[in-house]
Image 1 (cartoon, helix red, strand yellow):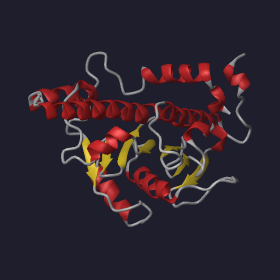
Image 2: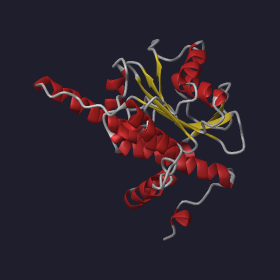
Image 3: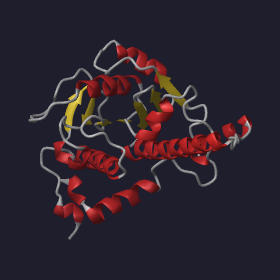
Length: 260
Protein backbone atom coordinates (compact mmCIF):
# COMPACT_ATOMS: atom_id res chain seq x y z
CA UNK A 1 0.00 0.00 0.00
CA UNK A 2 1.23 3.51 -0.84
CA UNK A 3 2.46 5.10 2.38
CA UNK A 4 0.84 8.48 1.63
CA UNK A 5 -2.48 6.70 1.13
CA UNK A 6 -1.97 4.81 4.39
CA UNK A 7 -1.34 8.06 6.27
CA UNK A 8 -3.31 10.76 4.43
CA UNK A 9 -2.97 14.46 5.20
CA UNK A 10 -5.66 15.79 7.56
CA UNK A 11 -7.81 18.45 5.90
CA UNK A 12 -6.93 21.16 8.43
CA UNK A 13 -3.27 21.31 7.32
CA UNK A 14 -1.79 22.71 4.13
CA UNK A 15 0.42 20.43 2.07
CA UNK A 16 3.51 22.40 3.15
CA UNK A 17 2.68 22.24 6.85
CA UNK A 18 1.90 18.52 6.70
CA UNK A 19 5.21 17.79 4.99
CA UNK A 20 6.94 19.81 7.72
CA UNK A 21 5.09 17.88 10.42
CA UNK A 22 6.01 14.51 8.95
CA UNK A 23 9.66 15.49 8.61
CA UNK A 24 9.85 16.81 12.16
CA UNK A 25 8.12 13.75 13.59
CA UNK A 26 10.69 11.61 11.77
CA UNK A 27 13.52 13.56 13.43
CA UNK A 28 12.04 12.83 16.86
CA UNK A 29 11.73 9.12 16.10
CA UNK A 30 15.30 8.94 14.79
CA UNK A 31 16.78 10.69 17.81
CA UNK A 32 14.97 8.14 19.96
CA UNK A 33 16.01 5.23 17.73
CA UNK A 34 19.68 6.17 18.19
CA UNK A 35 19.29 6.60 21.96
CA UNK A 36 20.10 10.31 21.91
CA UNK A 37 16.91 11.45 23.66
CA UNK A 38 16.26 12.11 27.35
CA UNK A 39 12.78 10.81 28.18
CA UNK A 40 10.39 13.76 27.69
CA UNK A 41 12.84 16.59 28.33
CA UNK A 42 14.49 17.45 25.01
CA UNK A 43 12.99 19.25 22.05
CA UNK A 44 13.21 19.81 18.32
CA UNK A 45 11.34 22.62 16.60
CA UNK A 46 10.63 23.49 12.98
CA UNK A 47 9.49 26.80 11.57
CA UNK A 48 6.21 26.44 9.70
CA UNK A 49 6.80 27.06 5.98
CA UNK A 50 5.76 30.52 4.87
CA UNK A 51 5.91 32.02 8.37
CA UNK A 52 8.57 33.82 10.35
CA UNK A 53 7.23 33.50 13.90
CA UNK A 54 5.39 30.16 14.01
CA UNK A 55 6.91 26.79 14.73
CA UNK A 56 6.10 23.20 15.60
CA UNK A 57 7.41 21.51 18.73
CA UNK A 58 6.80 18.37 20.77
CA UNK A 59 3.92 18.04 23.23
CA UNK A 60 5.31 17.98 26.77
CA UNK A 61 4.93 14.53 28.28
CA UNK A 62 5.33 12.34 25.20
CA UNK A 63 8.46 10.29 24.59
CA UNK A 64 10.26 11.00 21.33
CA UNK A 65 9.32 7.49 20.24
CA UNK A 66 5.62 8.45 20.53
CA UNK A 67 5.71 11.66 18.50
CA UNK A 68 3.53 11.77 15.40
CA UNK A 69 2.98 14.44 12.77
CA UNK A 70 -0.46 15.31 14.13
CA UNK A 71 0.60 15.41 17.79
CA UNK A 72 3.08 18.26 17.28
CA UNK A 73 2.06 21.58 18.83
CA UNK A 74 1.95 24.80 16.79
CA UNK A 75 3.05 27.89 18.73
CA UNK A 76 4.47 31.31 17.94
CA UNK A 77 7.58 33.07 19.21
CA UNK A 78 5.52 34.87 21.87
CA UNK A 79 4.36 31.58 23.36
CA UNK A 80 0.82 31.51 22.01
CA UNK A 81 -0.65 28.13 21.08
CA UNK A 82 -2.12 28.46 17.59
CA UNK A 83 -4.43 25.44 17.44
CA UNK A 84 -6.68 23.37 19.63
CA UNK A 85 -4.59 20.77 21.45
CA UNK A 86 -4.75 18.90 24.74
CA UNK A 87 -0.99 19.27 25.08
CA UNK A 88 1.30 21.85 26.65
CA UNK A 89 4.85 22.87 25.74
CA UNK A 90 7.89 22.66 27.98
CA UNK A 91 8.76 26.18 29.20
CA UNK A 92 12.48 25.61 28.60
CA UNK A 93 11.67 24.46 25.07
CA UNK A 94 9.85 27.71 24.38
CA UNK A 95 12.61 29.87 25.89
CA UNK A 96 15.36 28.23 23.84
CA UNK A 97 13.60 27.66 20.54
CA UNK A 98 11.70 30.93 20.32
CA UNK A 99 14.95 32.81 20.89
CA UNK A 100 16.84 30.99 18.17
CA UNK A 101 14.03 31.07 15.60
CA UNK A 102 13.68 34.82 16.16
CA UNK A 103 17.39 35.59 15.91
CA UNK A 104 18.39 33.22 13.10
CA UNK A 105 16.28 33.35 9.90
CA UNK A 106 18.33 30.41 8.58
CA UNK A 107 17.49 28.29 11.64
CA UNK A 108 14.36 26.64 10.29
CA UNK A 109 14.98 23.62 12.53
CA UNK A 110 16.42 23.87 16.05
CA UNK A 111 17.41 20.69 17.88
CA UNK A 112 18.40 20.38 21.53
CA UNK A 113 19.35 17.16 23.31
CA UNK A 114 21.24 15.97 26.37
CA UNK A 115 23.00 13.20 24.42
CA UNK A 116 25.74 11.61 26.51
CA UNK A 117 28.93 12.20 24.56
CA UNK A 118 28.07 15.75 23.50
CA UNK A 119 27.16 16.64 27.08
CA UNK A 120 30.44 15.10 28.25
CA UNK A 121 32.55 17.26 25.95
CA UNK A 122 30.45 20.31 26.83
CA UNK A 123 32.23 20.21 30.18
CA UNK A 124 35.68 20.32 28.57
CA UNK A 125 37.30 23.76 28.12
CA UNK A 126 37.66 23.52 24.34
CA UNK A 127 34.61 21.37 23.71
CA UNK A 128 34.94 19.19 20.63
CA UNK A 129 38.58 18.75 19.58
CA UNK A 130 39.79 18.11 15.99
CA UNK A 131 40.65 14.48 16.62
CA UNK A 132 38.63 12.80 13.85
CA UNK A 133 37.21 13.61 10.45
CA UNK A 134 33.78 13.68 12.08
CA UNK A 135 35.03 16.55 14.24
CA UNK A 136 36.54 18.59 11.41
CA UNK A 137 33.12 19.78 10.28
CA UNK A 138 32.85 21.70 13.57
CA UNK A 139 36.39 23.09 13.76
CA UNK A 140 36.10 26.76 14.82
CA UNK A 141 32.36 26.45 14.22
CA UNK A 142 31.07 25.51 17.66
CA UNK A 143 29.73 27.98 20.19
CA UNK A 144 29.53 27.78 23.97
CA UNK A 145 26.84 28.89 26.38
CA UNK A 146 27.59 28.78 30.11
CA UNK A 147 25.18 26.91 32.34
CA UNK A 148 22.64 29.21 34.05
CA UNK A 149 20.32 26.60 35.53
CA UNK A 150 17.17 25.22 33.89
CA UNK A 151 16.41 27.48 30.91
CA UNK A 152 13.12 28.91 32.10
CA UNK A 153 14.22 32.55 32.44
CA UNK A 154 13.34 34.75 29.46
CA UNK A 155 16.34 36.92 30.27
CA UNK A 156 18.58 34.03 29.18
CA UNK A 157 17.32 34.29 25.60
CA UNK A 158 19.55 37.26 24.79
CA UNK A 159 22.66 35.43 25.95
CA UNK A 160 21.68 32.21 24.18
CA UNK A 161 21.48 33.86 20.78
CA UNK A 162 24.54 36.04 21.38
CA UNK A 163 26.63 32.98 22.24
CA UNK A 164 25.26 30.93 19.33
CA UNK A 165 26.13 33.66 16.85
CA UNK A 166 26.24 32.34 13.29
CA UNK A 167 27.53 28.86 14.15
CA UNK A 168 25.58 25.68 13.37
CA UNK A 169 26.25 24.06 16.76
CA UNK A 170 26.38 25.27 20.33
CA UNK A 171 27.51 23.33 23.38
CA UNK A 172 25.45 24.31 26.39
CA UNK A 173 27.99 23.80 29.16
CA UNK A 174 27.21 20.95 31.56
CA UNK A 175 23.83 20.61 29.86
CA UNK A 176 23.77 19.42 26.26
CA UNK A 177 23.97 20.42 22.62
CA UNK A 178 21.98 22.61 20.24
CA UNK A 179 22.12 22.31 16.45
CA UNK A 180 20.41 24.41 13.80
CA UNK A 181 19.62 23.51 10.22
CA UNK A 182 17.64 24.48 7.17
CA UNK A 183 15.75 21.19 7.56
CA UNK A 184 15.15 18.56 10.23
CA UNK A 185 17.48 16.34 8.24
CA UNK A 186 20.33 18.83 8.52
CA UNK A 187 19.83 19.51 12.24
CA UNK A 188 19.63 15.77 12.91
CA UNK A 189 22.74 14.93 10.90
CA UNK A 190 24.72 17.65 12.68
CA UNK A 191 23.76 16.04 15.99
CA UNK A 192 24.66 12.61 14.61
CA UNK A 193 28.11 13.65 13.38
CA UNK A 194 28.86 15.72 16.49
CA UNK A 195 27.90 12.85 18.77
CA UNK A 196 30.08 10.43 16.79
CA UNK A 197 33.00 12.85 17.02
CA UNK A 198 32.44 13.35 20.76
CA UNK A 199 32.40 9.59 21.40
CA UNK A 200 35.66 9.18 19.49
CA UNK A 201 37.19 12.04 21.46
CA UNK A 202 36.23 10.48 24.78
CA UNK A 203 37.66 7.12 23.69
CA UNK A 204 40.93 8.72 22.63
CA UNK A 205 41.16 10.69 25.86
CA UNK A 206 40.53 7.52 27.87
CA UNK A 207 43.44 5.87 26.05
CA UNK A 208 45.81 8.61 27.20
CA UNK A 209 45.60 7.12 30.72
CA UNK A 210 47.94 4.39 29.47
CA UNK A 211 50.42 6.96 28.25
CA UNK A 212 49.28 7.11 24.61
CA UNK A 213 49.50 10.74 23.41
CA UNK A 214 46.86 12.40 21.26
CA UNK A 215 47.73 13.38 17.69
CA UNK A 216 46.25 16.64 16.38
CA UNK A 217 46.26 17.66 12.72
CA UNK A 218 47.87 21.00 11.92
CA UNK A 219 45.34 23.82 12.49
CA UNK A 220 45.55 24.81 8.83
CA UNK A 221 44.55 21.29 7.82
CA UNK A 222 41.65 21.26 10.27
CA UNK A 223 40.43 24.59 8.90
CA UNK A 224 40.79 23.33 5.32
CA UNK A 225 38.66 20.28 6.14
CA UNK A 226 36.00 22.44 7.82
CA UNK A 227 35.83 24.71 4.77
CA UNK A 228 35.48 21.68 2.53
CA UNK A 229 32.44 20.57 4.50
CA UNK A 230 30.75 23.97 4.73
CA UNK A 231 31.48 25.17 1.20
CA UNK A 232 30.51 21.72 -0.09
CA UNK A 233 33.64 21.07 -2.10
CA UNK A 234 33.75 18.16 -4.53
CA UNK A 235 30.72 15.94 -4.06
CA UNK A 236 30.02 17.07 -0.47
CA UNK A 237 26.41 18.14 0.04
CA UNK A 238 24.56 19.87 2.88
CA UNK A 239 24.17 17.51 5.86
CA UNK A 240 21.11 15.36 5.38
CA UNK A 241 20.69 15.74 1.63
CA UNK A 242 22.01 12.26 0.97
CA UNK A 243 21.49 10.61 4.35
CA UNK A 244 17.99 11.75 5.32
CA UNK A 245 16.04 9.84 2.63
CA UNK A 246 17.73 6.63 3.76
CA UNK A 247 16.77 7.29 7.37
CA UNK A 248 13.16 7.84 6.28
CA UNK A 249 13.18 4.57 4.35
CA UNK A 250 14.46 2.85 7.48
CA UNK A 251 11.63 4.33 9.56
CA UNK A 252 9.03 3.45 6.95
CA UNK A 253 10.18 -0.17 6.86
CA UNK A 254 9.97 -0.68 10.61
CA UNK A 255 7.43 1.81 12.01
CA UNK A 256 5.84 4.41 9.74
CA UNK A 257 3.41 5.53 12.46
CA UNK A 258 5.30 8.82 12.82
CA UNK A 259 3.40 9.87 9.69
CA UNK A 260 0.03 9.69 11.44
